[in-house]
Length: 105
Image (cartoon, rainbow, N blue to C red; front, side, top):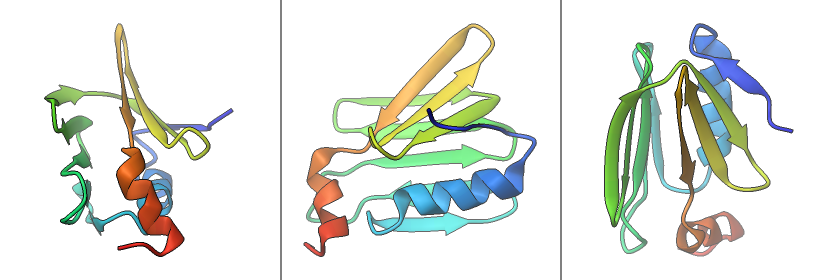
């Protein structure tokens, strides 16, 4: 079962975010935001978490911007589950870019 990380534990969230998206595209981490973006020619997708809990996620057929308070990084399902009182969202890494971890570019 994935560990749920509170937004208040920014350092642990930062480490888990970078570990989760390692080798899949471009990542950037600052004291105010964690961002991931895929790189061409692969499917265009992105996912970010700001220090106030705002999640921005973009996939070919949808885009969201909602605030959450905790996050679960499921390495087995390649999914980030975002949770807040009364709402949740799951971002799944597209299979096409998972091949990048195997050395494909």
